[in-house]
Length: 116
Image (cartoon, rainbow, N blue to C red; front, side, top):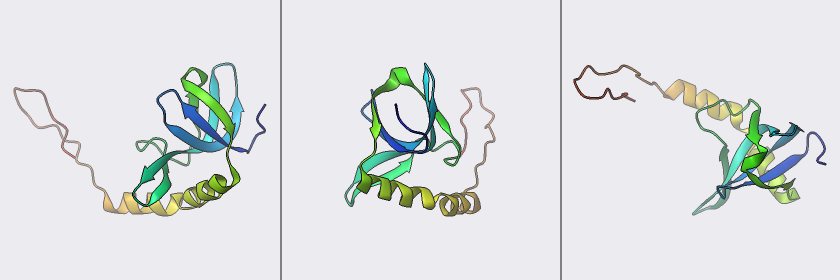
């Protein structure tokens, strides 16, 4: 049993690794606060929000059927996770101020395309 407010690592069946603050679980779901995916780049490992189309400050639920392993996260990784989480508000403010999405469909006899 994992304690609430513990940073945990999930290894998903897809191979992705996700770190997040454990909130709770039930028979079907694991609930995480601020889940981030572990990624590897030319500069080493880093974190990105688990889903880029949602608010990373909101809790996310993961189906247990998609999880291969869940375990408390290694101390050094927790420090990097905390650093990534601490930068969320700054990143959100930058995205909101610099991104404009034009979701106007173009008239056509073919399938409509979304302009971004």
